[in-house]
Image 1 (tube, helix red, strand yellow):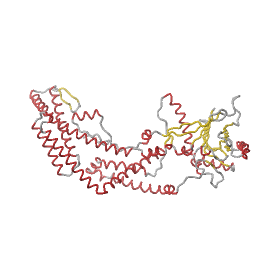
Image 2 (cartoon, helix red, strand yellow):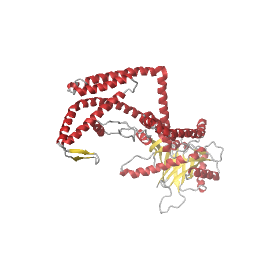
Image 3 (tube, rainbow, N blue to C red):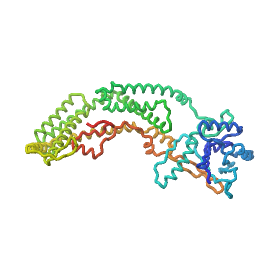
Image 4 (tube, helix red, strand yellow):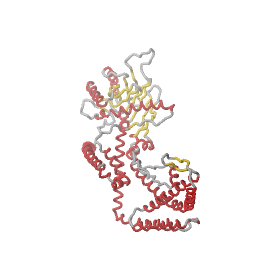
Amino acid sequence: MVLKAFFPTCCASADSGLLVGRWVPEQSSAVVLAVVHFPFIPIQVKELLAQVQQASRVGVAVLGTWCHRRQESEESLGHFLEGLSAIFSHEPWLQLCRERGSKFWSFKATHRQVPASPGAPGQDQVMLIFYDQRKVLLSQLHPPAALPDHQAGDATASAGGLAAVFDTVARSEVLFRSDQFDEGPVRLSHWQSEGVEASILVELAKQASGPICLLLACLLSLISAASTSRVFKLWPLSFIWSKLSTCEQLRHRLGQLTLIFSTQKAENPAQLMRKANMLVSVFLDVALGLALLSWLHGKDRIGQLADALVPVADHVAEELQHLLQWLMGAPAGLKMNRALDQVLGRFFLYHIHLWINIIALLTFHIYCFYVYGARLYCMKICGLSSLWRLFRGKKWNVLRQRVDSCSYDLDQLFIGTLLFTILVFLLPTTALYYLVFTLLRLLVVTVQGLIHLLVDLVNSLPLYSLGLRLCRPYRLAAGVKFRVLEHEAGRPLRLLMQINPLPYSRVVHTYRLPSCGCHPKHSWGSLCRKLFFGELIYPWRQRGDKQD
């Protein structure tokens, strides 16, 4: 059997003492957490381990002895360390020693019990694995990605062994609160052996976070209750609240702030990471808004922007006038119905004159043109479809939502033929206007879509996780890799365990925040079908909205 011992690199230069850690029998592994230094009283060491075990729910025990031979006088220390196995009984008993003035290590595991099968060796083959205790403590091991079936079993077993190591170090944080400078009866060496890291500002922030979160949670609950009152359900306010993107963004941010400042503690690291990502997203949103306001208010940029947009809007109106005048003539040499062409052209020109003389949105006139053209085109397409069914002796059954056979008399067929002929000859003129303003509408919708995607990116991008992956990649661990330090006959195999960070794509996929729900509603096929039949398109509608 191969026995694996995970030893912290911070204890490689520690003085001789006892190895304290957890034994994982399923993996035949020993996870060393700290070294207890001399002098010590055995009963006090056992009391400390009992307190740590009660607080962390981890079976912490004395696994063996650690001998660091620095001087000649320490040669006799090995005999004393071997006798400690009678006081701290553990199976197997580990004996780890670093040779004086050499880079070689000796490591063996002995059993006091007689082997069950005759001829079985009394010592196991051992493997010494060094790990960075601080990085393992602060990191979060993620489950492996999907693998082929023939690798699934090995991946599960490997992940289970690594999870036991990461979980042991993470849950034993209470052990690291004591260091070698403590005035207590037991002195320890671990990743904080030079003194427990602390900050006055951090401690003050922890103490003040509770009352501040409680106050903000009460304030946010009042705002949420006010936003759900009956006043906002009245027709004008409800319509504005459901249609404006600003209101939707406020509702989304209010829900995030309620979750962030909730007094309920995060149950696992994933929930804590989600709260941190939300907090950074809100801060970024506020910072971008304040930066934009500061830029607009500085050097009278609001007036400059207005002076720049008004000529652009007037230029757009003038170009639309030229376009309509071109359509009212003979566009591209096409022969249009002159009466209908003049009516449609003057109708749209009237809206341009109205828009020039009033205050309106920059693209509202384009939207109106698109709606008018689409409705008129759709009515003609529906009329032609109905009249085509009349020629074939069929009609649309509204109750059963299907096409049924029907017999028509001579007058009905005559009127249907007359109307069909009129609609067919008027269709090219209407279709041309519809095509032009549909293209303009698609251009506006594309710009709106890019803005929505930018807002969605700010809302859903896990910025805290990405920053953590960039600055401290070990915090998000996808697995580990091992580097061989020593591999010689007669000596234990020594490996260095290094953390493999999570790829950026998987960080985004794992910690991506829910967005406001502004997503494309149509596929390319349904979009082309709606454009052909003249149905109105709203590619960036909110989820749950009804179609017109």
